[in-house]
Image (cartoon, rainbow, N blue to C red):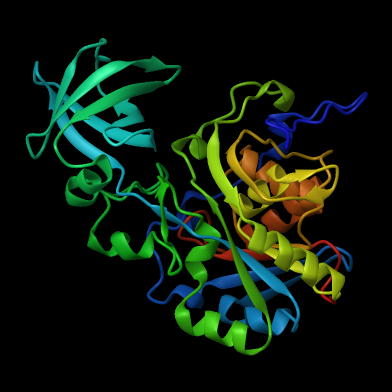
Length: 358
């Protein structure tokens, strides 16, 4: 496994600015639809060079018996907390990663950054001590009797992305979570999975399409803006993942039988590529900083279900590595013209690099 797979292509400089596109603000989805599978689906057949407007509930029509859908089963923690410094200033805490029973790395929204040893009082009276800093993150100790994850469930809010311009409400507790989430640890949802409901999953399984799971705990760094224009100068945030032996065997069996492996979300691609060495997928559990952009050859999947991503983002670069930068940007321009809904609560795209036939 490579910690940071950023290929250096002789004579080629990949620039952040090459991945820009115009997005009218009104196309940024601010809330989920009433039904998960009621979103739209843009079918991108790369081999044929075609695009087709579909509905997400039609996804089974685009699959074949023997295919394998791979999901990320991470569960989003209610990782946003509110409180104030002992001096009185308001503080917003966004947990980036739980690192121990009572410790975490976090981003702090505060007018004046607290020093080591500073104390934060949460809305329920719980005390938090600042232990230090790790780059842009603060290391915090929660001085409570209960484990941190229980405190988050009790007083935390779902950490909606910064482009959703409203506070989280009770509906987000369910909807900013996949129906198959089971491994707590993420602070952002694997959003491609949000379109699946139990009825759609049952239809997919009944038609002979298999399912499998990785775990990758999405961190707050997924929204981190790239500062350098040369993407080779960007260092990815670390995320923990697990690709189990049972899934590896399913993928091998699917490929041997001529089926396709279709990832549900970019986090699944990152997990599988992190567990791939010299084109061979093996079980792996640990951290990854893998950075996938054009020039990197993705070998672990044959298709991808994904939402539409931020301009100049590492996720837009990943899907461009799968389908080609100009193909993706052209599809995004088409999606804007067709008024697709963008980002976490928006619509989806099915990218089939090898075409629609298995």
